[in-house]
Amino acid sequence: MFLVVSNNDLDLLALRAAVDELPDGCGPVRAHGGVGLDPDGDVPDLAGVRVVLVRLLKGRAGWERPFGELVERCRAEGIALVATGGEAGLDADLAAASTVPAGTVAQAHEYWTRGGPANLANLLRFLADTVLLEGFGFEPPQDIPAVG
Image (cartoon, rainbow, N blue to C red; front, side, top):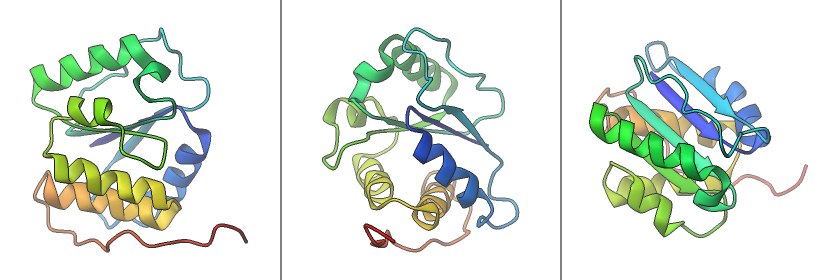
């Protein structure tokens, strides 16, 4: 199971559409957050989660205490953690907190920054294949129109 944490409602809306594009067996996917992501809130339930994907606008400061707890729990429970910021450049602090190789974090960030449901679906497929070794196949990140 994937857990996607974001403090951006648009990420979570794209995720809803992306999940519909996933092949059978790739998932399930659960979301947590949105603009109401409480910076002092609790870490979501990790039961059954194999990969946690975090994207935080404003970096770690957007969810400081819970993020630290999430990192500790993922490390303790052997859950893959992929953490990126919401800006165009890679957030080194979040990337360093990730438990997967740096190249995996950089590629995940590239999918996020390109945007759209198709890139997000391919991000999940990419993580399923590279982290969980599932073999669904994925496309590289694609540019999407800025408007329209």
